[in-house]
Amino acid sequence: MNKPESAAACFEEGFSCAQAIVSAFGEESGLDREMALKVSGAFGGGMGRMGETCGVVTGAVIVIGLKYAKTKAEDDGTKEKAYSLVREFVEKFKSQNGSTLCRELLGCDISTPEGMKYSEENKISANLCPKLVRYGAELLEQILG
Image 1: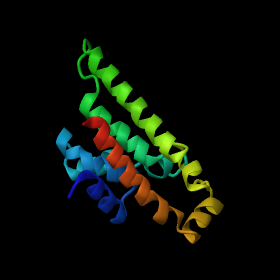
Image 2 (image 1 turned 180 degrees about the horizontal axis):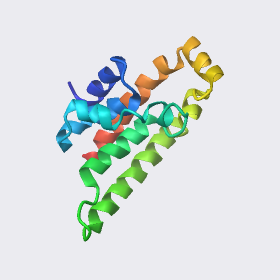
Image 3 (image 1 turned 45 degrees about the vertical axis):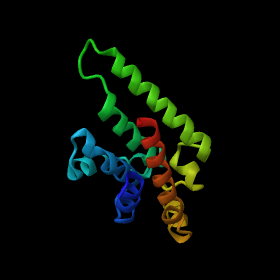
């Protein structure tokens, strides 16, 4: 199973969009599945279901950080690489989807009871989020090479 399929399958299991992305890419950075699910577990629904930055985006930022984040005080090159890749991911995600904000992507604010009810009744998350997860995983795979 490739990474986009793995991410989509994880989301379909009931994990969040952020968890789906990090679990699909985490192992190559030393995170086993359980730790990947834990570290990304609060980012779904636009960070704790606040409707802010989409979990696909925050998950991708975590993955980029795992691969390129600065770990030595003198190593500014990796930090710049990470920042550059984050900007590239966000620009392409936003260009393709119109936003990086969960509430804008969904067309409703799931941080409110009314918005959550609307999303559930219209199966917005169930229909849209798997597509965003798959696209985000494909984009991340492309960017990371």
